[in-house]
Image (cartoon, rainbow over all chains, first blue to last red; front, side, top):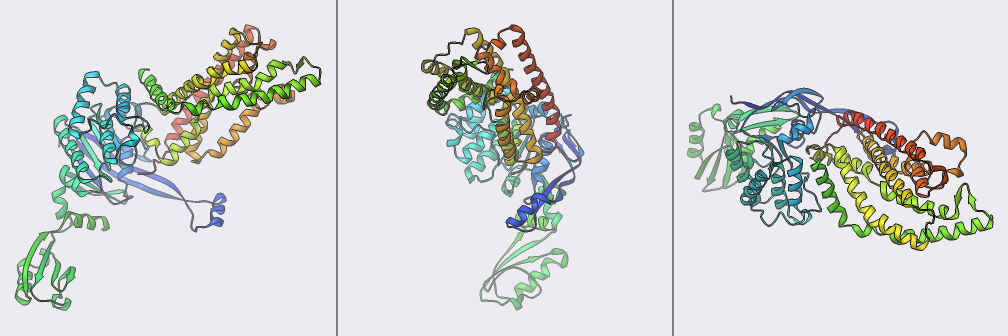
Amino acid sequence: MDELIIDAKNLKRTFKVSQREKTGLFSSLKSLIIRKYVYVEAVSGINIQIAKGEIRGLIGPNGAGKSTTIKILSGVLHPSSGLVKVMGFTPWLEREEYVRHIGVVFGQKSQLWWDLPPIDTFSLNRKMYRIPDRVFRENLEYFKEILDIGNVITRPTRQLSLGERMKCELVCAMLHDPPLVFLDEPTIGLDVLSKDAIRRFIKQTNQKKRTTFILTTHDLADIEDLCENVTVINKGGIIYNGTLHNMKSFVSNKKTVEIKFAKPVTMEMLAGFKLISFNPLDVTVEIKPENGSIQSKLNQLISSLPVRDININDISIEEVIKQIYTA
Amino acid sequence: MSSFLEIIRMHFKVFIQYKWSFAITLIIQPIVLLIHIALFTSIYKYNHAQFIKGYSLDQMIWYFTTINFIYVFIWNFTDARISDKILSGDLTVDLIRPVSLFRFELANAIALRIVGVLFEFIPGIVLYSVIFFPRFLTIASLGKFILLATVAFLMYYLFNYLLGLSAFLIKSNSSIINIRVTLMSIIGGAVIPLEFLPDWLNKIFDFLPFKYMFYWPVQFFLNKASVSGFTQLAYIFLMQLLWVVIMYLLCKFLWRKAVTKYGAVGG
């Protein structure tokens, strides 16, 4: 394996959450005096190793612990226990010095100053991160061109569209040439073109500057486009870690078969097949090769039913993810 | 240091957009001043008094205007800002900056007060002097006031920052903030001059920081005979510094405890 940039062992973070069983005024008054707390483990024993120059995708359902993991790795949250070394730093202990070496974008939060144009935030960052003038100018030119934000950065942030703002957030996170960048849902709520621009930007920067990216997303196209390796997190733990390609076989080697019929069929005629969707003229079934050869199953279909057209597909990445999430 | 100045400049740019809301006191304060003139002129006349509790008529009338100046020098919203950041989870953004929250918020407070001094204090002192001339005022007493008011600004910032840290534990500190304003202005002498309160109470107040934020700087502005010497100035100044050091150390200590409690809510 290449040189590690992140090495995290057995990360845990527990939150104390107050709980009220009933709604209504009485129970909220009661909660002033007696309050029940439950301890929720947002992250329970995560191990993660990331190599330099990698683009790693973190995926998982809402509330799985992705953001908590990113926040611990970026120094924002203190973990309850666990060991982390990122470029020699323990993020939350040496936060002020550590954050000089990373870039962070939280899709739900804004680093830009609301009342001022992004260019003002950029020049503040130049001072805060002590970016040399030449580097600052070169980077800004590069970002302006690749993200097409030349005439955006001088308008007040509050007047920018979400996509324009997100592009500027990326610039904010990367002006100081950090070797490691965390992106927490950077494409949330963006249109196809903006998403494309951001992906292109990540890809090119990764190639040009060997920047390591760690991104969480719910858009699988982001992952398919950018990441070789994915880490799937669910219920505070890692349930898959490896290449995107292998993830499909990790679930199982299923195929979906779409069949169009010349004459209407009934469900009974398809007994023995796992139906995904059913219309009298149009049926999708799932076939597991290990339960018998595909050949015999297909033979059975074609010989006994009025098949007009047939399509055999690999199971979609969405299906795979759905299965992993609900597993 | 240059990044600190740059943060002040950024906040200044934001606040300067709202300069007219600062100047609003220039409309309200003259009315308050006129009421005080009417009130105290008749009180002094009725009592045939030159001085009441050591204040001449001019000094008594200006006491409350000077309190207003103190607020112009020290006021900030750091406690509420920190509480909001914790409730909304926006503190996350502060924590990815290579600057401590302490310095970032201090820059915010400084910029806020620079705009305040430019648009409230400077035109204010001219305007109110036209309405009722402060015969007691000298360049030296004004200079002493500005010095002590500047340190009072630091004290008030530190105090507010400490209150803000309480939000790490109790999330919303708005109730504490409300009590603080009332208590601080009574104990500090912003409601009535402390001479009107019993001696034993004043002795207790001596052990609290608020007197050094309001009462004492005002005494120097009013050029009271009791504070004419250099030793008084040095004493008050050193007491202020002592409070600054105590509260600063507390801030450092509590921040380290508090930040481990941060939950980073909201995405």
